[in-house]
Length: 282
Image 1: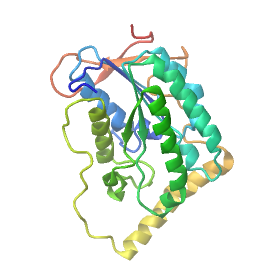
Image 2: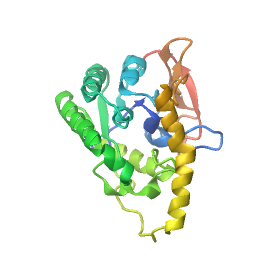
Image 3: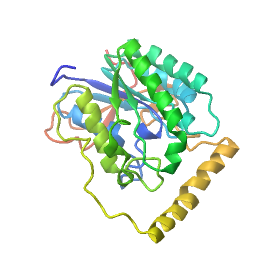
Image 4: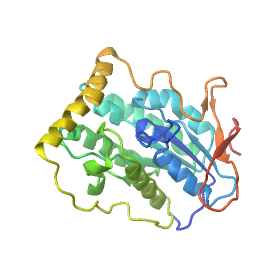
């Protein structure tokens, strides 16, 4: 990548990781790494445009069927695709199907954009993750293989030990904290060839291990508030994303739309965005 490269548009595709959970804002919406990255790109590029189509809980087949065509139609400078991990974390998973649908997504997105960015997702340290680690690593090998074949860039979050630190994960143990999301934004920023603003791989300072009683209380809270509902959705075939669409997708028109900074050209961080159109970027 060229250092100080310029990008005029970004489309983000995927599941809850890209939607921004659990980086919760006061108004109840999520921000997440993709929104942070878009704001930083917009601050350096006039008339920057952004669309986040990611929806929590989506499997790779749903991402392909519901988001890929809409993303490709926007003809963005940069498209990010993260998917397949929800499949890999299910008790039963057809990895052959995951491979086929992921390859389909990349084959359809790569020709439509200037730069396609894929990721090896971060993995939280802990016993639950160890059970699914072989599937995760199979998925990430596929990411590397497909990226090499289609000229996509890969952000290796899985290979950064700092992102496995439980302190960078929310209480649901599935989603990153605000600090975790900002590290991901910086990782993608650097992958795009932009000058580093922080070192996202830096470990957190050492901390005293929580006492046994505190760990048990946290485990019970996690099981009651997050694990049991998650199991219930799996058993009933429901998803946290049922009935939802991406933040910049119009169900009425059946198309994605762009947002752009409310006060384009103002120095400093982007404070607000507004919708500009539903037509592809020329």
